[in-house]
Image (cartoon, rainbow, N blue to C red; front, side):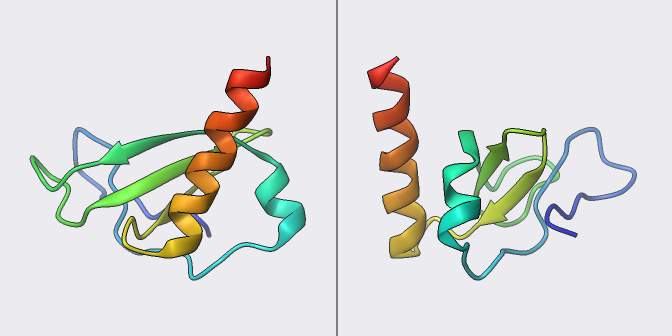
Length: 79
């Protein structure tokens, strides 16, 4: 399971992070959003969306996460 969500909450919240992604999976990422520590969400996270609608949560302090965010922005700007 890639995305952990809080049950009984009004929002989808990340409860844990993935540790990393393989190159093939990184190419499938289409967008991301930030999860802040407010409301029912108790950890900061970057929630990445993949081509088939799959979601996964990553630690915004990790270097690979920031690199992937830049890759996603670069893809958007090329379109």
